[in-house]
Image (cartoon, rainbow, N blue to C red; front, side, top):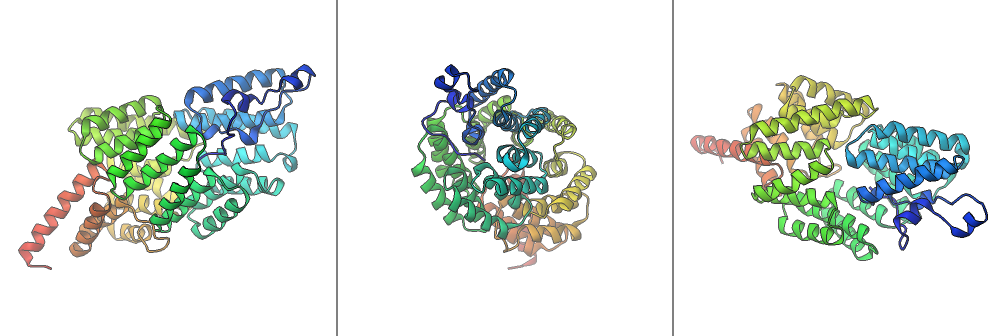
Amino acid sequence: MAAALAVGLTVTSVVMGADSDSEAEGRPAQVLAAAVPVERLTAGDLAQGIEGLQKHLHSQPKDATGWATLGAAYVEQARTSGDPTRYPQAEKAFKRSLELRPADENDAALAGRAALAAARHDFDTALGQADRALRVNPYNERALASRVDALVELGRYEQAQDAVRLADRRRPGIPVFTRYAYVLELRGDVTGARRILLRALDSAASDPDVAYVATALGRLAWSQGQYGRALDHYATALRAEPDHVPALEGRGLTHAAQGNTQRALSDLEEVVRRYPLPGQLAALGELREAAGQRKQAKEQYELVSAWTRLARANGVATDLESALIEADHGDAREALTSARAEWARRKSVHTADALAWALHANGKDREALVFAKKATAKSPGYRSASFLFHRGMIERALGDDRAARRDLRAALELNPGFSPTGAREAKSALSALSALSGRRGDS
């Protein structure tokens, strides 16, 4: 998720904030931390911005705002590049900023710490740091955004809705609009989410904003099985920014859902080449597995395990990702350990689903169904084909064939290509259940 884009400024001027007059007068170049759109910079521009900030801070080491900006840039670079070793560097940069300017005057560093904690999946800390930043500056956009994100990930959806409404009153713009849409989606209001994103797209005044919002629209359409619409949105994003990796990933997943394996492989291979993150690695692995390339798929899953070990060593809580990937492709016992640990930290629908699936992988289906029902409950109202698939397979394992048919059918009706391997398994299970029902004469 992104901070506001400073429209009309070049990357260099935004990151460096250089002012020729101030330089001529011997004053430090201003670094506009609150306006740096690090979350939507391209990898090259982000690297350039970091290099510029490092040079600036070498000559102006007491620039507290500059250190906060550098920390935020490190967080984004770690998040997008798959290099979690940047997180300790970000932590040091924020610490240095707070040494130079106290916390009760330094909302930029506090908001940066909130973003860092969120990137490490420590959402309680993210919420606390965001609240501290907002006590200093109630209009700090990064803090407002991080607060919404933390509440969402903690499963505190009513509070998240209140938080995003507050953010919309204080700092309306692309970052808030996209969060507002996601909160509505989590509450089951897909139409409302799409309406807000379309308005955001109409208001987008720069190529990065267009790419960002169009990609969010593409993801929403894909989740509803609207593949043609999704491809249109991803095309819009890639016209605005041809190297926009999230749009490339979304296009690849959509091609996979349509059965266009070669085009999907081409897109996802490029995504993984640039950003080898767990979700992308696993998606490519599943696509290869579905295509019969088992050896190559195994290599992708092994890379996920290697990344997880590196991330944990750098303070990232990876239990949610580990639980799902290990349950499907690795060590079921490790999946359950990870899922239980994550559930102890946060009670979101995504965590409930991961715990349900890990329990199922360990043969604990009665307990699994409790959590599968939490993930698919009417409140908050989120509908996910993957969640429905997991619930249906758990119900099948418990012998509740009617419920299993209902939920597997619902998953495939909602998003028939939700996963290359999962969708295939759902179709196979539904076919077997339907055949069994026919022999029994069930309705």
